[in-house]
Amino acid sequence: MNEEKCKRTMDGYRWRCPVSKCRTTTSIRKGSLFEGSKIRLTQLVMMIYLWTIDVSQRQIAFEAHVSKRTMVNWTKKLRKICSVEMERRGTLIGGISQGVALEKKGGLGGKVSTIFRDNCS
Ligand SMILES: [Zn+2]
Image (cartoon, rainbow, N blue to C red; front, side, top):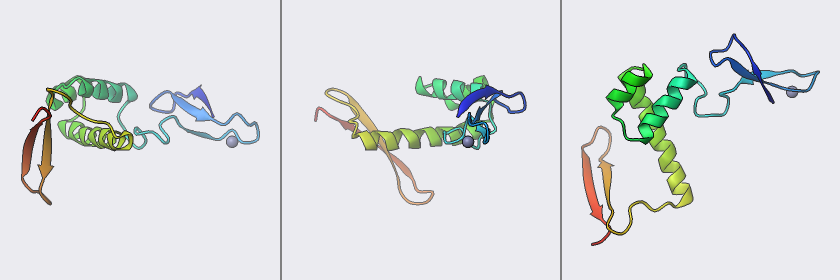
């Protein structure tokens, strides 16, 4: 697939098959975490960037011009992606003299308890 400009798509680009008999087109979001979202890519990139530097959800929603509910949903999605990737890589969090805060939610609508584990002890 080749990238081509397309004014009819919200992103301004799409993929097109280079085979002359085919010429199939598809969204540049296909197969990405952005597939199915109606939010502009510029907003999504801004949301993700601000989220990675620990900006509050309220502030991110304001800066990216999205609703707080949208930001909450994207935060859940981003956390899930990060946790899956960390599990896949076997990434260790924390370290010597670095405490790790863990949250555990008990059942449906259960109480969230935070456990702070200091790796020194
Ligand atoms: Zn094709």
